Amino acid sequence: MKLSVIIPVFNAASTLEKCLKSVVDQHVDDMEIILVNDGSTDQECNILCEHLAESIPQIRYIQQAHAGLSRARNEGLDVATGSFITFVDADDYLEDNTYIPLLQLFEQDENTDIIEFSYIEKEGHRRLERKKILPNQAYTTFKDYWLQAYAYQHAYMCNKIFRKSLFNNIRFPIAKHFEDVATLPLLAKQSRKIRTTSLGLYHYCWNNKGITANASAADFSFLLTSYLKILQEVSNSAYYESVLNIQLDTYELGDRQLRLPLKPYYGTIKLCLLHILSLDKLCKLNLLYHKLMRALK
Image 1 (cartoon, helix red, strand yellow):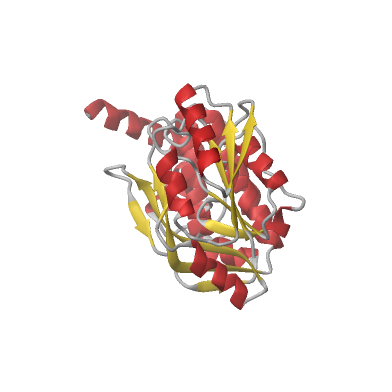
Image 2 (tube, rainbow, N blue to C red):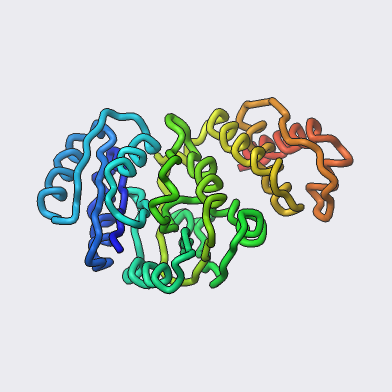
């Protein structure tokens, strides 16, 4: 049961050693670490990558011209030899003894194709940091996983282990941010069983220079597109309101296209306001509110 851990790196000299140490310290006997240097422009990072690749036997080191996170992950997938795949971002790290208990869950049930484990989100952010311990639950349909497990709230790749065969015909979209949300549903729809578990812990670390902190209107537009595709297939009130929030954020960042269809969901103040005011007026009200909040700071 070989595990391939894919770690893209771009100018991450300050965090890479901690990240890699947390992976090596998982003590998985049959594990390869695929370190993909995505054209780092920081010479310190390049030297560190080469040093770590030489000193850690499990590392397979790949260098590519800078093409973004998706291309780096795809490069890792193309050379991975494990039966199972997981991803780690170079500015994050794992809690000790995370991988072995998760791999044992795969051994207990050959129908399990994805295991999603617990995480700390935005670690280091004084207002947004939160710990999420997932329930021990199994889902056999995409609809149940997406809606009952609230998978859309944590549609990340890094707090999951995947059976590699799921990626036979799936790769990450190139030159897009929030690529996880576009890719995870494709993998989940192919899965026979998806398990969530309280075992293990992934530390998502807040990075003021990272993709999430600096997302543009185009990034949020792509995110909205990904969620709207799912909304056409599965939906409930909570998911619909989540997509509404992304529409509001996209509008606020400068993309004024209104794309969320009106659906008969009520039950919260925001959803009631949507029906009373219209999507256009709610977007404008949200924009005005946030402008006032920024002015008062």
